Image (cartoon, rainbow over the protein chains, first blue to last red):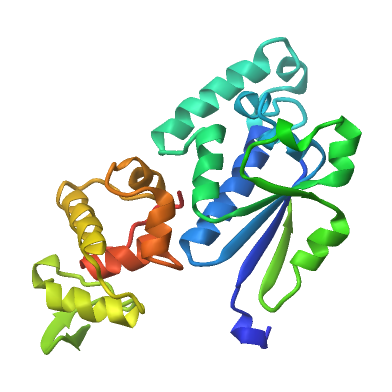
Length: 160
Length: 102
């Protein structure tokens, strides 16, 4: 940690999930970095791509099954409508604390200079095209490209 | 604690934010801006005025609110106050550092 006194210069965030709580975690961390003068980039891979897929990004849900912190029994969490219900509850609370919804948040990230990339392998797997994605996605890149972009002192990588 | 800014003794906290907005004036803003390597243009002043108004009205500041202010968009805000714009701009404006994560 003696390098730059451990100063964080850039956060490289990998988002692999599209549940609302994970997407928000990635977005808040990226935006918070920019607010502190730290560079931030997000690599969207696997289900994380849904957070930047134009037809899906506005309709992400909270996970109600397999999430003990929701305090909903798994059997009930799996009932029809539970995800939508939990999501609308969460969105109400988010608005109260001035948390933007996903489409607005993406625009904020873009305007704040967060660089965003889509994973080529996952794009191929889901048969997505770059035109399907939010305009703020700069390019579709490989894991190798992402590592290359992560070179340098004070760069930290985070997997969500 | 106290520090001398533009020839005046000013109360600041450990991060250098003014603790008494009444002590703020434009000469102090000029000094704090040059410390942040920013030379203030009329556009900067407009935004500083907006931030101070929000402070007077006790509106908590966030990047999202800046974007919706109609005074400046987020992109330009980052261009005018590079690095940490909200932290830098509030310091120059002589108001407290916002506690927002968004």
